Structure formats: C-alpha cells, structure tokens
Length: 264
Image (cartoon, rainbow, N blue to C red; front, side, top):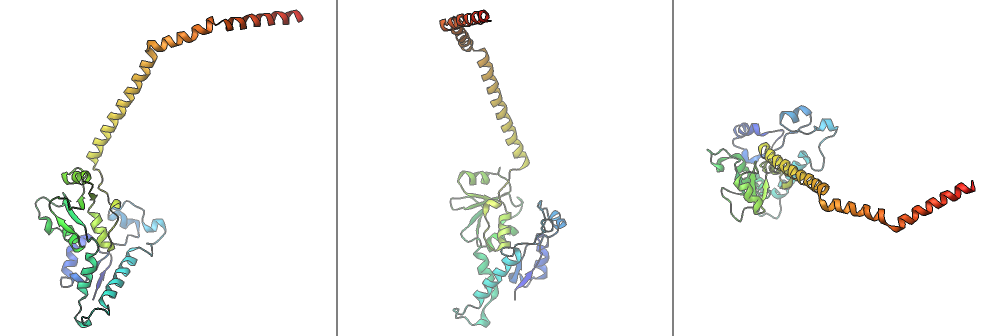
C-alpha cells in the first residue's frame, strides 16, 4: 500500500517519521499546496498566491499531476508481466526506491556550509535525501564532483566550483527534485550573493564609477587647457581674417549696396 501524504512540510519531518514509523518506505511526500496569500507569507514565499493570480496549479505539471505520473510508473513496474517473480512476493517499496533513485542518478554532490559544523554531514536530512534520490554525496572536492551545494558564494568550495566550472546550486534544488520526482533545472536554484558580499560588490562598482568619472573630468579639463587646442582655434580664425577671397567678397557687397542706392 502507498500512503500519499498531502500538504506535508519540513516542519513535520519528525512527526511523519513517528506516525508512519513502520511504513516510511511506503510514503510519498508532496509539497504543500499554497493557494492563499496567507499560506505563501507563512512559509516565506515572496510571490503572488494562486488565489491572487485567480488561477489554479497547472494540470500538466502541478503537484497532483506530478504525483499521478509517479504512481502510474510505480503501478506499471509493479504489475510488469515480463517480471517472472510471483505477484504475491513483489514489494512495492522496492519499486518506489528504484524510481526515486533515478531522479539524481549520475550526480556527485559536495556540501559547503549547509550543515552545522558540530554535526556529521551523513546524518543530516538533506544528505540522506540526496542519496535516496540516487546521488553520491561526498565531504571533499575532487574532479568527479558534479555539483557543489551551498548557501553562500563566498565559501572555498563555492569558489572552487566556479573556478572548475562545476554546478553551484542551492539546497532547495534537492528538495524540489525530491518533491517533483525529477531532476530540476539547476539555474532555477542559484546561490545568491549575501548582503555583506553584495555591499562589497556595490562598493567596488561605486569606486570604479567614481574613477571613470574622474577620468572623464580630467579629459575635459585637458581638452579645455591644451595649448594645441588653443593654437588650432587661432589658426582657424587667422585664415578667415586674411583670406583674399573674404576681402573680395566684402568689396562686392559694398559695390552692390552703392548700386542699389543709385537705382533708388
């Protein structure tokens, strides 16, 4: 039997482990259904709720549709006629485990400051979740690492990931993949710059802008006081004053004015 637990959140981790102590492997966790704005605010989502958008979750890839697809896959595998094992001896828990392990298969993760320093990483919930999803978890970096899971871009491992072109991702990527039973797009779960790091970047940018502004002011001042520029202006005036063609034009203007006066 598969127990489909709706609207469960991480606050109830210990609760569900106690209530379904003998059936944890039968349990399929679902993400909470945030329809009302109050629910979004309560759980820290700074987005418009479905009620505010006047719509419901998508029927094609919403939470219910996702779980329905998973249940269909489990059903197909469990009742596969090609399997020679007698139906009475088959265990749906093994089928669920098999399907779940396909989610992050091929991923090797290392965590950076995600867990308390006093704890064993292997005992942490998110570590165990990643392994249940088929990922290999490691405490140290090496060339085989595919993902660095972190909440701060300033850690040594995070910098290593950027330098070595590894995927740097937030822990919520693992949680979302667990809920969706499908590897999620890593770019949707970036590790954001913390405020103090952002302030540093802003200070550097401001200093750079100020430096560029100073350069521009110096260029204007130099252009205004450059003797060569003043010489160019004098040279432009001199030809206009001494050009014979200009003098001839003046004489023609005077003659025309005299003629007009005579005619009048």
